[in-house]
Length: 131
Image (cartoon, rainbow, N blue to C red; front, side, top):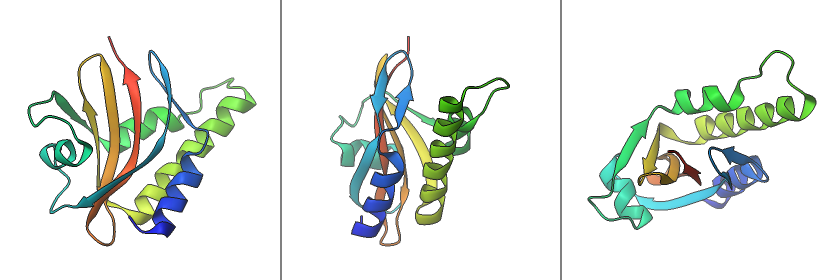
């Protein structure tokens, strides 16, 4: 990941919290060269066992929840949704073939990744608890 992309993702994700049954910060994920965005490639680059439980989710699907503003939402919720929209835009502008991978069972490592201009697996990561 080049410094400009890393800075853009760091700035866009700074202070954002991914809410599940636990709350976790979002940080850049910096992988290496990859031929494609696949579960096997992500597991290898993120240091997970090759047979780890992994679920692929849609990029648009995950951001639809994070950027949705509900009727009657307070200013903090509206601002947070706008910040997630900015993160989504930064990822769309700098990465291709964006995918979401949830690794593990109950306590999950969540990766939102794609390929950068140099063909490296890059994006952001967080944690979630889903029972």
